[in-house]
Length: 310
Image 1 (cartoon, one colour):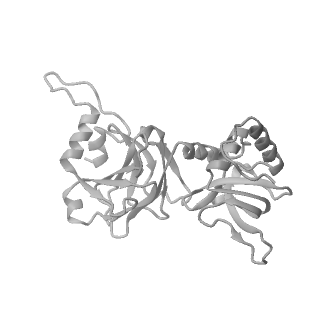
Image 2 (cartoon, one colour; image 1 turned 60 degrees about the vertical axis):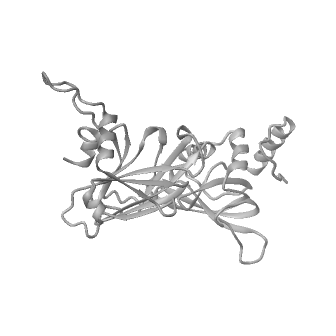
Image 3 (cartoon, one colour; image 1 turned 90 degrees about the vertical axis):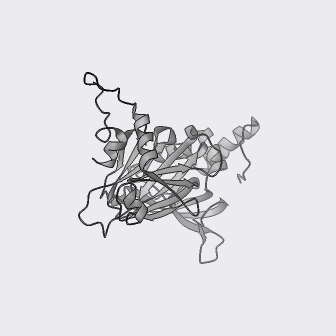
């Protein structure tokens, strides 16, 4: 029987039957079945750096144990499973206290990841997130930790010598999860409240204009090339000083292709977050509109943080 079926108590993603034959002992609830499996055949694997884990299905422990537990305590990292056999349960938590109901997890499979299916699991129920061989390099799956954890099950293979399953992950709490929601619908304008919060919480905040836009249909995204006149904040050196020594910066951010971004004139305030190594656009009002929003909030004492508006 497949490991996923043992964990789920039936076919993956479906509960087992509830009718009992006469005289049969009552079937334990799915959570008890899951705990019995985990306690009986799972071994714990701890990451040396608490952020990333790399293991092999060819180790002695992996052959002896059907399910391995992996514990990671970091806001971002990766899992790489060479020669996958059996299954992994990946336990993700941040390295600071935060209630799980406020945490959102996003995973992005490695290019050419193969050899296993990735599921969202809760109390024995499985929901397929990434199918073995799904090679879309830009695909990102997000879920709340309240919805469950990650269960990675190796698929039957005649030759596992060239198989490797892997993905990056990011944990976001509170405001970052709201920012992610904005990223999933970036075509709508942000409200004044969203703009002012983005100024305070974004990974990058710049004033500038759009130089050019490159559309990438195969990734369903547009790359926006920016000319920046003022750099308020940035992470990961998204924007670099222009080589001609003009005192300006230049760099690029991405957004969804469906937004239909085009080059144009005007000064904007660009905000956004780093997401799996890419600078993704969040709120981007015209700078004159941002000045108005900021002054109105300042007069009412409602600005969540201070920033220069001239």
